[in-house]
Image (cartoon, rainbow, N blue to C red; front, top):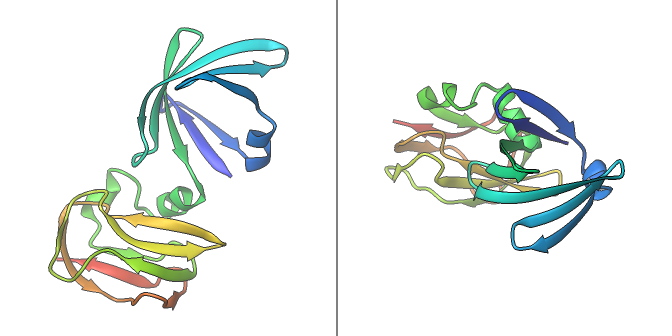
Length: 158
């Protein structure tokens, strides 16, 4: 399930199944023709920030800011790591049980906000764990190919 936030004021829950039934045709790069309830909708993706999952979409000459949150984003938000609160985060815990596939940081490394720290496989999906803030890695409590439980301490910041 995805949570779609439009202009930071309207939130919609969208399932993968409902996305598959969407009648949308790509007519040109970043341009789409959508048919919903016998109504034609023209959409254009004006700007896409894949890392922040933020998009500017023009629909019938109106521009909307769209934020797409997948299941991992929703779990991270539920744990209190959402933007704003994340700036004070000193440790990263596993948002769900899974297998550590890859670690992209080392102790003592300076990282920037949104740097990829590790990849956690859960529910047959690879979930990229990004740094919630700038900082220095104090410790890494897991190893590649290690299975972790929800809330297991993964990484600490200085």
